[in-house]
Amino acid sequence: MAAVMIGVDPHKASHTAVAISVAEEPLGELRVRACAAQAERLLAWAAAWPQRIWAVEGAGGLGHLLDWQLLAAGERVLDVPPKLGARVRLLAAGDTNKNDPDDARSVAVAALRSAGVREVRPDDHAAVLKIWSKRYRDLGRTRTQVVCRLHAVLCDLVPGGVSRPIYAARAARILEQITPPDAVAAARCELAAAFLEDLRRIDAQMRDAKKKLTVAVAASGTTVTEVFGVGPVVAAIVIGAVRDVSRFPSRDHFAAYNGTAPIEVSSGPRKIYRLSRRGNRRLNHAIHMAAVTQVSHRHSDGRAYYERKLAEGKTPKEALRALKRQVSDTIFARLQADAQRAAAGTR
Image (cartoon, rainbow, N blue to C red; front, side, top):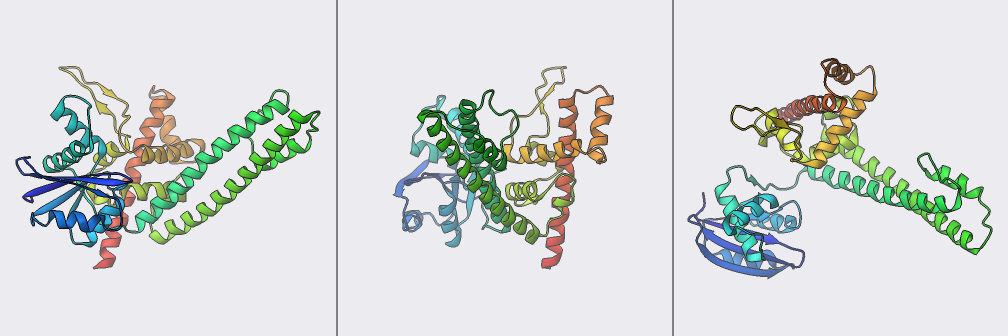
């Protein structure tokens, strides 16, 4: 362990760094403006401590560029999850009061005392998959908003509204059949037509993003797509979230990370397990979609496993949760096999 741990609380406009010793004694504090010279100023300030490690809160978020700059300068950087830093701050202060220096110090303490903090590595092909999967997800959310607004306008134009899902072609046919009786109805028709154009544009952008995502998944050479129900979108989410599967010692650790493993809340002789709401929710959703796809196809092994759990007396939700754990284990095995094949190819 280095003699000095430097915690960084990154923001869009500025970054605050606090250096502490192994005994958690404060050694220095610096606030720099987020600019082209941010890394140079931080490195010049930290030159007084040659044996140092940087700990950045949320290295995959606002601190990503700073991480890249520090790595390029030959520094060692740790990624501290925001929740971990918040827990350290709460234990230290006993309340939720916070400021940037306190946050940076909590990040440094968390990195100093937590054995499971991950070391930041340069971006690889998994980062490409993460970028395009996030783009596809954001477009999907925007599409949902546009569809909801279009549906609300059509409810004012069509008696009873529109019962079935709205697609661009169907919405166009509905608007063609409407003859506005007055200026208000005409304005609503114009608004609906504007939403329709937005929907068509977003649909085209989603198709383009999915094509790029599919090409990126194929370039990765992964076998995760061979799992039933895992297409390019799900595979991109999985690989982008996991990056290095070796950081999970076992499939149980991977299941805990993605939230498919139950949480033990036992007390005394009572052994109780509850549904986990923790973990990476994006990864959990991807596994959920794969499981739902398996259940919807009667010929799949996942459907047979699901029906077997129902026959054992489990509820549909419980059976689906059990299947999600099976999907998690299968994906983990594929990721391990991919990593081993890649390692053998680089030797």
